[in-house]
Length: 335
Image (cartoon, rainbow, N blue to C red; front, top):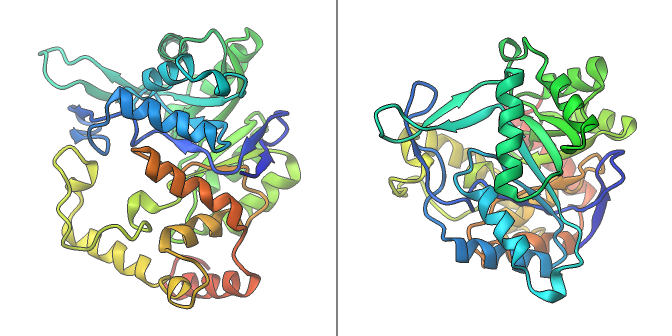
């Protein structure tokens, strides 16, 4: 496993981390914001613990989570508390989020997935995450993909206060768009860490964001590197997702179109540049030095091991990167 600086935080993190959105188990929610399956399906505490322990044994030391990833925060806490003796000295950077909440339903039905970036709600969210993660200090807390009209009470300012109070080690934003991430660096300057979607199918960060973040010492964490599994090569357009998998709600036409875009990069496998599409996708991201860590999800030790192994393979060749950019422009993904 190779390591990279997480911006100016002083932490060296594994360049392949663990995203725990799939690892927290099934969550069905109700409400106007989101109704239906909100995760990838069932995962037991035992499987989650085994997965995290295996990751630590492979050199992984960066874990991303959120209160809305079902039981992920609880699973992480138990895995770290019950880790084997030979793994106890590993310093693990756990990053969670705030602003998106799972609230009990008034009628006793499925919980409500809600968003609230008010100062009171955000402070309460961090306190609940401290309890679920069994820690007084959370190393990293990010705002969970806020949009402009949710920023009225300056939630990033509240995170600054929580950092000063030693409830939080480092702060940042999981940004909704590349433009917002650039604004946070150029105009705001308070975010130490920015999380952003970036993949073969979402290449916009390569143009300005990644060079700017590297120059200014902002840690960049990459979410959705396999585009919700569309770059995993593990299913086809006629695949039937389980009812507790959020992808079961995706229209068939959208699913097929996304898969066709992903197949445009199969030449990376066919020409022997990468052993699989998922390998190519992760090596593509790690080809950019502005990236601190990429956080593919995993639901079991085997998936995590496959992801972690990418670190030893190195970046894609420069000629392949140039052709990838050409393919992205042909698909209208890159200007």
